[in-house]
Length: 163
Image (cartoon, rainbow, N blue to C red; front, side, top):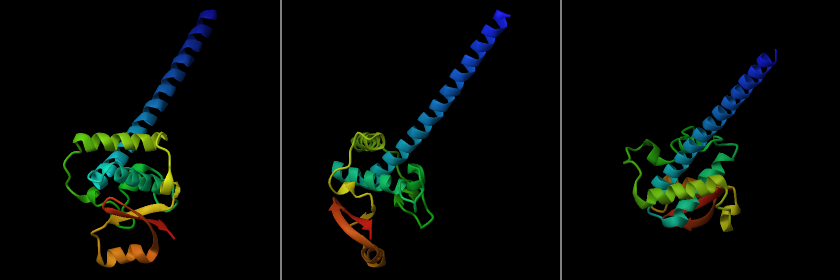
C-alpha cells in the first residue's frame, strides 16, 4: 500500500512539474514573439532616427497596446489593419533586420517590455498613439492635424495624442 501511495504522489508531482513547464515555456514563446514584433516595429519605423526616435516609436506602440481602440497585444498592434495599414513596413517586402540598429531595437524593445525603461518627460502621456514622417503631406497630414493634438517632433517624425 505505501508503494502505491508514493508512486501516485511522484506521478502527481511529475505531472504538476510538466504542467508548470508547459505554462512557462508557452509564456516565454508569447513574450519572445511580442518582443520580436515590438523590435521589428522599432527597427523598420525608426532605425535611422537614433535612440530617441526608436524609444518614441516603442512608446507609441506600447501605448496602443493598452488603449481600448487597439488590439491588446504588441503583435496585434503592429499588424492591425482594421483602420487601414498602421505601419507601412508591414505590407512591404523588407530585408531581414540586421546590424547595430537591430541590436538597438531589440534592446529598447526589451527595456520597454520588461519595464526597465521607465516613462519620462512627454512619454508619461499614454495618449500619444500616432505619428507620421515629416514629409507626409496632403489629406493624410490634414487628418492628423484636424483630429489629433500635436505633441512633439522626434527625428523625422511628428507625434500626436488623442484630443
